[in-house]
Image (cartoon, rainbow, N blue to C red; front, side):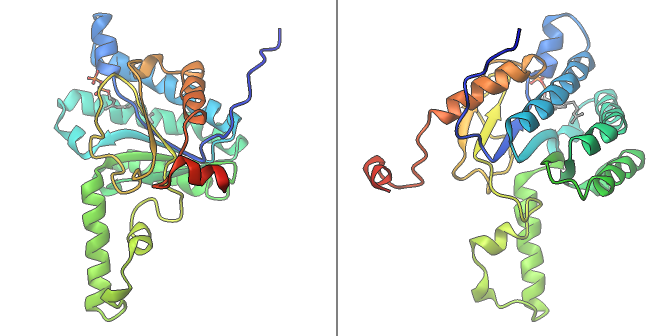
Amino acid sequence: MLEVQPEIDPVPVHIAIIMDGNGRWAEKRKRPRLFGHKAGVDSVRAVVEAAREVGVQHLTLYAFSTENWRRPGLEVKGLMSLLKNYLQAELDNMMTNEIRLGCFGQRDRLPADVRRILEQVMADTAHCRGMRLNLALSYGSRAEIVAGVQEMMRKCSAGELDARAVDEQMLSDHLYSTGQPDPDLLIRTGGEKRLSNFLLWQVSYAEIYFTETKWPDFRKPQLLEALRDYAGRQRRFGKTGAQLDTE
Ligand code: FPP
């Protein structure tokens, strides 16, 4: 029987997700943490497909933070290997579904083989216009902002930029997310209620949705629930509700 979904309106243009809870999900099942990350990759596939289906235009997934390098070597190696397999396996699917892959983060810190396939998929999907999928890899928001400021200061020293011209838009243009709209909705799975150095500049006005559901259990129905919650919110951007009613 055909499943009838009540329409979700509006759909966020950009969703960012902190995919948390893989380790605890596995530990609860008395399995190694990597088992949780593997199940997490299935959630990535499901959520990318569902987001594309409902018309999300930008999806940013926090897959590996700068702090995650401090995890046990075997876990880091396992995550890198999952990432490489995912990228190899998904290229055709991304092309078919017009998904353009991007990367936010310190690409040069990634193992050479992962970086190679990542850049290959980015190049092969550069023409795709259906949805942008950004993977945050070796990503940290404060480091991103510092790098952006440094680049603007370098331009000032070189006489290419007047310091008085620096404004919010210009800083935005010096971040990994340049050219993409700020997230409308930030989702964090796994029950913790913090931002963990993720897109601190970009989420200034994002609606935040925290859920206890651990990432391996977060699939299409859970995404739709988050989208319905988002659709029910009033985004005021500093104005009053009455002002918005008369617009
Ligand atoms: C957080 O769970 C999750 C991560 C650090 C990695 C997320 C990675 C994936 C979902 C798989 C690889 C990604 C792609 C894009 C193929 P945690 O380990 O911190 O969980 P815990 O808080 O329960 O310990």
